[in-house]
Image (cartoon, rainbow, N blue to C red):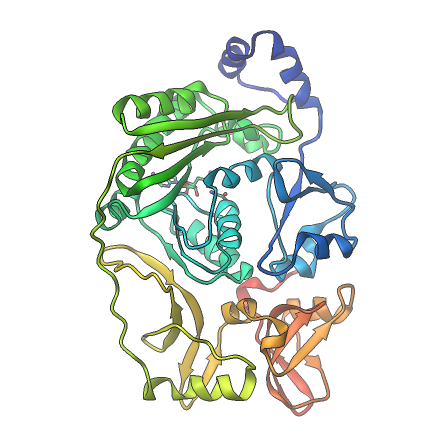
Amino acid sequence: MINLPQKFLEDMKEILGEEYDDFLKSYKDRKTTGLRINNLKISVEDFLNMGLFNLTPISWCKEGFYYDDEEVRPGKNPLHEAGVYYLQEPSAMAVVPNLDIKEGDKVLDICAAPGGKSTYIASKLNGSGLLVSNEINNIRVKALGENIERFGAKNVIITNSSARELEKIFKGYFDKIIIDAPCSGEGMFRKDEGAIKDWTYDKVLECRSIQEELLDRAYNMLNTEGILVYSTCTFAKEENEDVINNFLSKHEDIALLHMERLWPHKVKGEGHFVAKMKKNSKVESKLKMSKIKKLTNEIKDFKEFEKKFLNIKIEGNLELKGDNLYLAPNEYPSLKGIKVLRSGLHLGTLKKNRFEPSHALSHYLKKEDVKFVHNLKLDSKEAMDYLRGNILNTGESRGWVLVTVEGFPLGWGKESNGILKNHYPKGLRIKY
Ligand SMILES: C[S@@+](CC[C@H](N)C(=O)[O-])C[C@H]1O[C@@H](n2cnc3c(N)ncnc32)[C@H](O)[C@@H]1O
């Protein structure tokens, strides 16, 4: 049996009353594991038809499924590297549906790394609107960047700032904001023993003050009738109902639409809390938009690449930053004063007299968008070899080739003399 902190147990007894024993018993059950299908790459139906991982549906998320981590390893499957699904704790999948994402929405995810909620939002936006995915921690933001890239999303800006800095430029701008707040992590005790070791009651109070600050900043960035979703993976009342009630008492124009706890003795998932609110006052947003210079001659090598290797034209706001070419978001606010990891989709780099496509572009494209494709079987040694960074013997010399697994892009290779040189990024190569 897990050794749980005494003060935590006393607080749970007070909240749960008669249910306390059932709650304690749930610590004898195994943690739950889930994956969420990326509808930017495949429909739920087509994925299920592949017959993988012996999945069972998660009732609160139509793209979400349980798998048994003692039987299958979806994290060690090439389709994971291809961004076909995201591994996510099942209860955490209950949060994003509260945002009621509609195509065209402008959405802010304030605490986004490693990207569980942001990848879900991006798949719901389906390339439309704008997602600003922010993470304050400059190490965690890199994992966020990789996960969003793997999902193949466009119209996403990834920032590495505090909520205070974001608030300075985004006043009254967003239709939807999510705060998946840093918390004392009590809901993760069954999943992660480290969370038990790190827990103190002081941490609960410290998190509470950060959470209150984040809500205040979010309030100012919310548009008329904007939806604000607040979530934690903890049980402490101090970080959940108390924070929400305090916030509501400060803002008469905020209505609480829904508040819910997910308890491990009641649902098949870890502990979570979610509150959905709406701003009912009228807000005026006077945001400056970015100005993009029209590019012609500067990107002629990209245009040549496009003609020679793609079956489509990449249309939209092309922006050059140094040697790097981006497809900037259609809705592109000025980001002055904000630390930005990426604004839009990185298309590639202009080298001397040639264009080198980015890994992000390989995930954004579909196999039919590219002239030359080298497709690998899911259980082939070649697929693993490619992900390990090895060369492949293809017997052809076609130049840039999209390497796919079962038709889903993994990355680029460059073919000459019958050999495909591996362009799978060094930092992502698998070591098993
Ligand atoms: C619960 S995690 C977010 C998980 C993420 N939403 C997901 O679904 O993958 C909370 C995040 O808040 C960040 N954070 C910590 N302190 C913060 C602060 N003061 N302001 C904003 N974010 C903070 C942490 O670095 C962490 O990445």
